[in-house]
Image 1 (cartoon, rainbow, N blue to C red):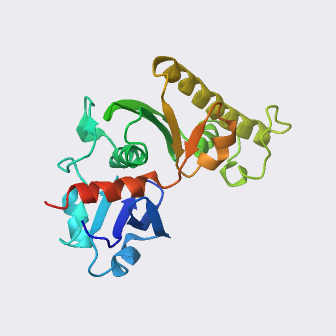
Image 2: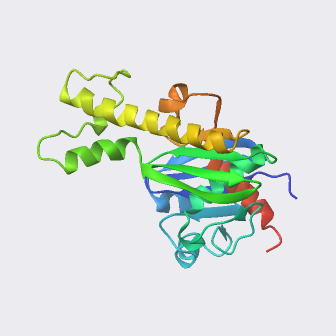
Amino acid sequence: MSNKPNFVIDIGNSRIKSSQVQGNLILESKTWDRVESLVTALPKNQNIIVCSVKHNSEQIKNIFGDEVFVFNEHSKLPIRINYDTPQTLGRDRIASAVGAHFLFPSEDLLIIDAGSCITYDLLINNSFEGGIISPGFKMRLKAMHEMTEQLPDVTAQSDQYEWVLIGKSTSSGMISGAKNGMKNEINGIVSILKEKYATLRVLMTGGDAALFESNVKGSIFVRSNLVPLGLNQILINNEDI
């Protein structure tokens, strides 16, 4: 295995991110507005993996060229997938689970990804057992605005309000509903799963993880970069392909 860092690309629903990864270290990360800009900045003489929730393998090869490794349903994984419809399972969810497994290889894990949606993924005995998907923080705010006649769009204001329960305005009431709804949802799901799996370790990742880490009961491990860590391990796992 080469000691050189690998270059990992994660094309998600709301952002495009590249990272230089070596082992459990993220050496450098960048966010890109356009795929085309990233293509022109691809490193030379470095192994590259691409994970996209928007493109199939052929489209990725057309964009980035044949030299990149495409993470798809045929890739070898260091974990098992026990899922009824593996072809519909988001590659980013798998990558997060692999990253969590890399950090805690002998433990049962719950990975909470607080992004556009909030996902809860269960890894038991190194097997991905499925999970839960629900609306993320800004999605909840946007839904209240778009599915009613008079509730305002407060997504741009959501970081201007302190964490309160009882809002003193329509905007603060909506933000309280979204934040406290997510907080109690997270705590409830964690509580139920810990009753079944007593030694379960909880990890949180995603863009909104910092918003909720101090409001989740019990001990949690927050790591914002589980996806690039996991993609790096998937690339290593497929070096002989």
